[in-house]
Image 1: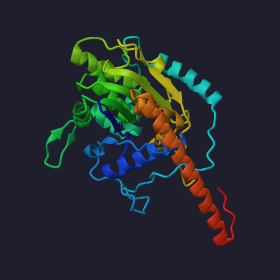
Image 2: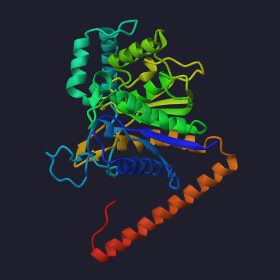
Image 3: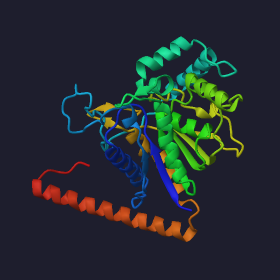
Length: 345
């Protein structure tokens, strides 16, 4: 059985599909190299849906920040001097806030209180979510269409294409909602070996409530938040405590086990995306190169391989890493000789 790595992006307009895929893959490889797995460069199939909501992609060649297609969060490598920050106090505060928000907005039957507040927040601050949940669109030919159905179909088609493979599904931001909907509403026949949610808003009461309403309309049954039945081995959730979209970082509290006993496992990570001195703890590139994510991906890549194969791969990685470090060291010395400037790593 082959292994398939599938990614689906999140909120907002994106660069063109090819560039988005390239930067996701570069981040993934950067993370694997960071844990000493240099030779792994896994293929990624991107589920790209920004073109459903936006007429043109963001363009890295546009220099005017006022241009609506200006790309202000391109891929950059992790800063060499980045130091993860522990937020123990913030963690306690967010845990307290989560309980209060759940108690205030979400009823036992998963109906929502103060809908006008939650709908206002979605409408004002989350354009894509507002369209996804509440609005139809008109295409260039004047025909009405439902973006939510098209976005879900993009993902379900790719999943169905890999129904005979072991699937590692990486979802980010609003993409975690799309993926959970597709899996929970049984819009695909595929099984997902490993379900990855990153910077996810799935713990927000209004999101849970909207899924519960749709589930009841389709299946005429009450919805119980749990791991989708099609997830067969793992659900890993990654959150940076400074990520405002993932304010409820602990999905294990909100989603129960499925029939196979699979439950969300939460990781608190440090997103090291920094551009021009500005941090963005929600950015996917920083998440994809965290050591916690990289280790989970590596375990999937070597899963079910023979012990001899794993030993040989690890041996190659060690030799490859040693070669790279030696080469870089000699290049640094050569640079110092040519310029008379001591190299500072």
